[in-house]
Length: 489
Image (cartoon, rainbow, N blue to C red; front, side):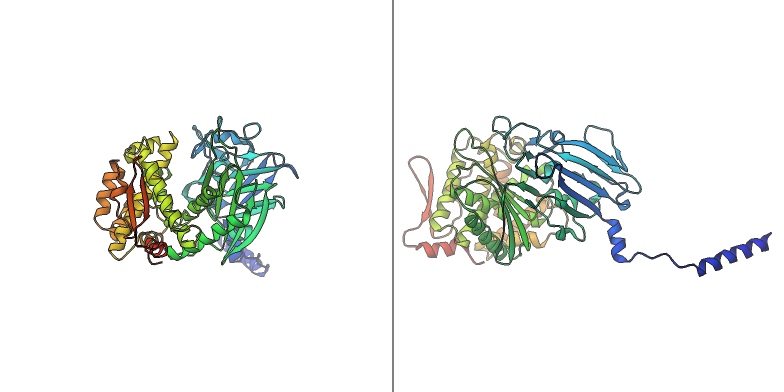
């Protein structure tokens, strides 16, 4: 029996040796098997009332968990934006949130996205009209953070399938950007514009800028592109870090508030978003675009941050960004010395008149969305301190620009912690940074704009109204003062 079994086994081996071998997957096939696919489309040809989303997940994603957001920034109840969810090879997990675990062998999930209100957004219903998904017959506009899930354990890389989108469409990523896979977190940090936007492609130096602009504004597309080009160029020079080769710049109109105008900007991955009422003036539009472009470096290129505690470091993430928005506009020739000093004067006076100016960082983080004054405080206080710290660093032969460059160079993919930010600041600025931060930010002690360390060519003058005005010192020329404010690039 043993001999016959061995002979039979040898015969089977011999037959196998004679049979042709099955084709073996090459490296690209094996890599493709590890990739998932994100597909975007519209539910009905030529109509934009609903956007379709599908995630196809390979076996390599088994065990990971997809979690759909219920809130993002001021937006809540985001599950109301998704409907007709279908899935296979995924397990719906119990609990309050909507989450799915990928089964062995992989699977897919598909759903439809549509706005959950009638007509146009409005200020009475929405805390920030325009952030929520907008879908209508003629156009659609959405932010990935409100409709795409997050992925535990980093998930797997995803390629893009945009073939079902119409020609009148712009997404933060082109399929070629994700030919070897993109992270879902990056894809979620995106904007999608469909329908009756004005789409264009322009060159800004070595950078290709795709634009999707809807509405009629005080700045036309050329002027907006000029701001973007100048800011990207100066950011690259000042922070010694080149921008991406291409970006999407999206502009969508929002209703005017009951009084005045509204301009809101958001920096996303390889893209910038502007939400503005059509009665907004050109100066405000320009500055908001400039501010959001600075976010390309602060903090996007420094590493991920803990979203749950982001409000506690807004003195840096928004305050330093606001300062550099003014500084880089000056460097790019978008504003002159008087404009820069007027902008810093306005920040100082808004801070002085703010009823919440002495809120310590912990309490401010809890109340950040409570009022416009609370939301603006980190911009005002942080920008004034950033100017002051830039001058202190200059006295030591450095600059705040160098701090930003250090934090970008130190990005190893790890979380951008408060400790890392503060260590980089103290290293270039010196010991006064720690005491300033503790006094004015952590404890919320009132900051005196008259006591700031300023460029030698700038004087701070108190006025009868209790305000302060920064101006070029008598005997200094504006051009000389401009160079002193900017410092070496």
